[in-house]
Length: 382
Image (cartoon, rainbow, N blue to C red; front, side):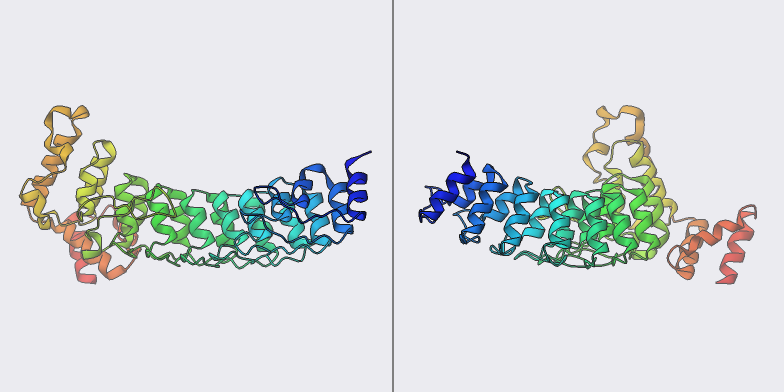
């Protein structure tokens, strides 16, 4: 006698299907691992399908966790509530687990709205974006999922995709019109995350879609600051054209973005400037970043820590200067702080201010013109 027939006989004899095990599992929940025929007998017998165990699991969520799409279909068609536990709605759970087949079934045949959310505001699109599932993200957006849905923490699918370095997914979301400037509770935008991750391609894509390059988060960090902290010259080169005057030198402690859900740790114990953050890097990247900032018009004479010789530890320790980068950075900083900015540097600042974000690239068209003449022309034009 097979299990399905035995279950049918017991249910017909009015066996009590409501007696749980010690952990709260009901017979229907245990039947999930016995196959679709056994589950069908419970459905035919009109057994309640939405009971929860002590962990908040229902027969449906257990079937989802085990990728039993056929059993999911039997339960849904039999009347199982996809939101019997609001903390574990079926659609969001499928996306969180990465089960694309059950996800597609629930939307296309199970009647579930693609924007179904849990009690924290997370939708299937949030989970799919976080996992980097381009197929699931495309499917949900094609079925009408809102690309800018926000969680209770004000996180968007785009922010999750960028934070977890899923470039393809971030491109898909932007193609469907995702807003690149929505910030979370910490005032971080996707560009903050992309800059910290050193993702030059993602940074460029966000800038192309009008991301605010100079926005500050809750601790005053800009995307440029994050890029410097991360030691990414390529990203800094992309962002520098958008910074002029004081926003170039804004100090911050910076967030430590180790875990998306817990951005409470600060990168520095006290607020530091981008130039200090660049100088602390013991590498060619650190030297490159210092030179880039100074070339962009960074006013080193305003940095008290240089005048006081309160350098980052790596610049103070002369014994471990492999490659000689530390000594070069130290001398470059001292020289830049003691001497007024060059006329060329001042011209750059004035031109950048006049042309606006990204506009200073136009000045490069004057290559070949003598420097004094170029400076004079630029100043006269302004």
